[in-house]
Length: 75
Image (cartoon, rainbow, N blue to C red; front, side):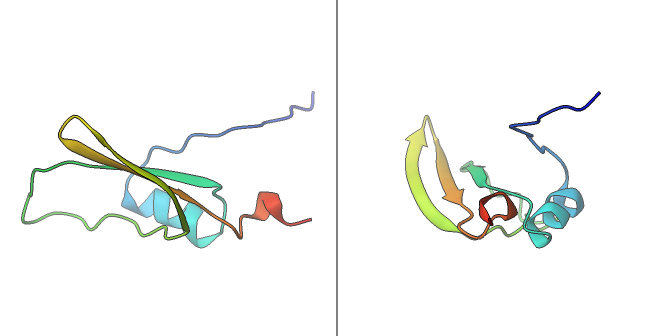
């Protein structure tokens, strides 16, 4: 049976997310940044892309990026 998948949400750790980013397998990244600073820990993955929208959600900041070079857009 063949399936047509239109969306996939990847919620993983830094390693998993960075692999999807490095392989250009993302269309949109939604980044929620809180006000708490942990001082130490694992560095967040880096997506880049075109800034689409940024807005406050309570005390947090939501930033949405679009990947203009996503493989799904390559014809």
